[in-house]
Image 1 (spheres, rainbow, N blue to C red):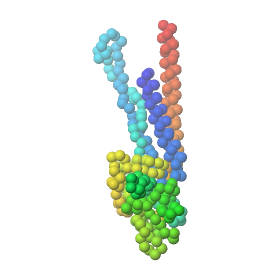
Image 2: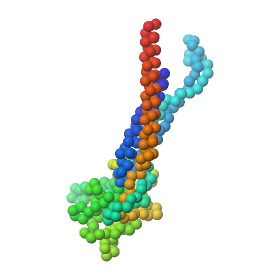
Image 3: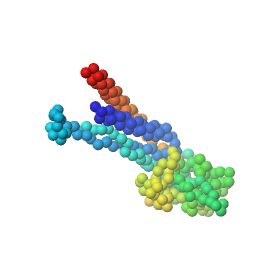
Image 4: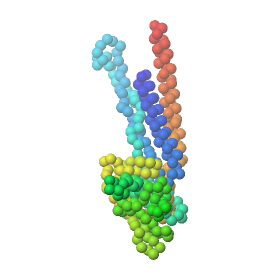
Length: 268
């Protein structure tokens, strides 16, 4: 019975943590460039159930037969990010950009001991809502600088620009201004650093980012929306809630049974 309590509790804990993941996915269904999270459930080890003879003897001698096994619940083995592309929507805005492959490189500036600016703290994102700041520098909606292939911010002219599918920025005369740094990573090499921002895992230095195979496929005047499927997430959320409620009912029933057994034992 104690094993049953533990099994029900671990099932409730796994469902509760999975529910948090699903709720976050649903909350970011309209976040530009958001990639949903998925949780992998794994079972804990099974325990053998044996039939024992009620005699005062060592345990190995009392076991007459193994009659089955019982699970001890489930747990969240890992959280992973689903990097499948989201839907592209046309906005017509000059500095709204969407990618087919790879990630934009953005960064916040810091000054070293000599006063020089450094952009070593790089992030990677599919959120292409860019704009000019007061100095004409290309920045994200959060104010991060969008970096070029040299890891430096990009200064734009006051006139409209054209951006090619390879990320080359040109002015109205066709002169090249800069090239966006767009890189891709191996699966599992990026960790979430915000709703739509990522950083390399500790075992993956930043310089392991490589140009996307087949090119970035950049589209100017488009944005990539979240890859969250609301119908799928809501269906999963309902299923997880039912699992939680079922384990809660089992836990309550076992607790009542234990209480009754303790009361009966006290009267003997």
